[in-house]
Length: 304
Image 1: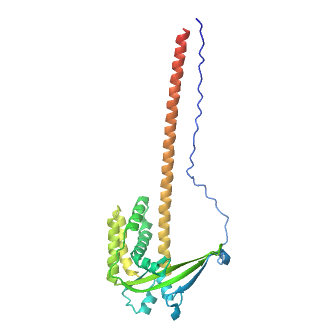
Image 2: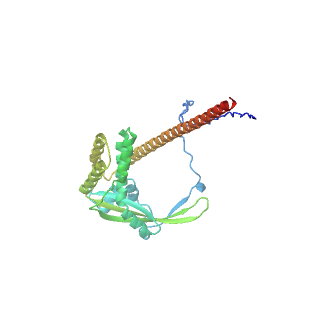
Image 3: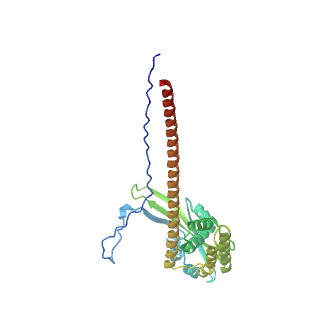
């Protein structure tokens, strides 16, 4: 009987390991001391590098009204004193402004009126997140507060429309020199102090009841009520800047926490995938080893 020798094949396995960078923080480098320059100026863009914006028409232009009256500038900064004086509005009434843009004056006016409640909700949102969010160290609580404050609506009632003002804006692109135009409409409302207080109270109560917030957070939100009553329609530029800075800082913090959570989740998923691949590889290796052993056994039996 002719015997033929069976040749056992060896198996080579190459395991490729994928390394995932998690953005390790580099060691800080201490900069060389620099003498501060109190008159250091920020370089301004050249005139031909920025779009040119012109107000080409506005309310009562034919009557000598200026394109950006002082009362409007002050209202946009949160101070209604000049407006109250010019319109003979009692000091105890709260005055608020809403603005919107559109392709026509009528469209901008309609959007300005319709968006007034949204504008006031955004103002309250900024105050809540800016003030209460500073004391939240837990990312989940800040997330819950942000979502609740963003979704809570300000239902406006008892308003009196005092006046409106439009501007027709022409923009000339710095690169292409193309022209575009739009209308901006400002609507000014007033309300009694009692109405504003009721609105703030309802907003805060809806906020506290509409999110899974800890008791301490709810207490901080409730404490804002008296503060909102005090500065209902008058802010100085410093206070407004501080509120906006605090709001932006909290949102930046929230986004950073989200980014970290996403990075951690991606890392965990990668590790899981790596483990699964390794297990699959080991299973394949075990199967090949088993097959080789069976082949060796068959050969042994054949030779014997």
